[in-house]
Image (cartoon, rainbow, N blue to C red):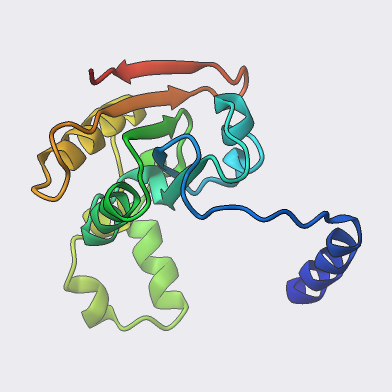
Length: 175
């Protein structure tokens, strides 16, 4: 099982790990809303010059679902943890841009999810499907800025990263 592999890796990691007292406050006063895509792991932060302890990173599928939890996390980063800027960072070739709602619903049914539960939601909206990675970043920036919980003096930027050349492109620069 994967848990055994993870625990073994942790055992090896702990042997080499050098403990360091760190603050839970983001040292660069930055909150990042990004995608949970596995290709971003160990890639996005170095591409942005972000190291351990520098930023609060909030991830979800396609960084598309700007719901209570995302806004709550961004607000917590601002009010409780001292973040002064927010960056929404999407990426090209996002899996949420290619969601097949029918295939998703069938997979859910095959795994035992009640058809009545599935029919109660717009599955495309529920999963966070997007039509365009760039438009999604712009939309997420707008949703965060429109929230009554996010103060006007906190810049919310929108960027997108290319998974192959690691270049960031600014889509929204909030001053």
